[in-house]
Length: 43
Image: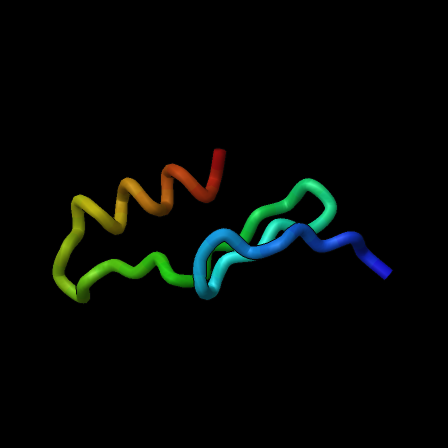
């Protein structure tokens, strides 16, 4: 069973060294923010 730390915010989790922030969103026509998010998740 993976070790899970207490979530700091709703829709967030830290498990076995990985973090998930499901509360992040980008508006439909916000191309600059979409590019920033894509760059962040691919590094």
